[in-house]
Image 1 (cartoon, rainbow, N blue to C red):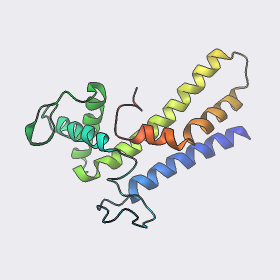
Image 2: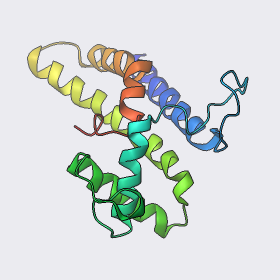
Image 3: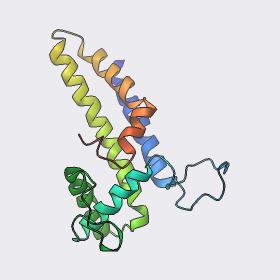
Length: 164
């Protein structure tokens, strides 16, 4: 029973991330209460600081190094995250994904990282609570990490938090 619930939770979260990734509007909002069902890609879950980070990562993926717009060198990013996101940018460019759609790649990648986090959390708890029921611990880790919207935002905001 719990095994089926675990798979269900994973499918729900990855489906949610995939829906946001594919169907978020790439237009810019024209008013605060826009009334659209899907979020704007420029608004959530990636933050303003996240877009700064992704701009540097995109430039890094193009082989320009750690720079922002117009060739401005920067040190205001986390290097490991920039290299990882830059690698994703390089891959994205080579499969025909445009810069405006790069945040979609990051949202999906970050959702997968959240799933990995829940598995690491499970392993940590199991090492602390030897002899406990593995199925219930895995279910609770999935439930409390994957279905936590604040944690989802923290992982998918375009910054390094979800990687570390």
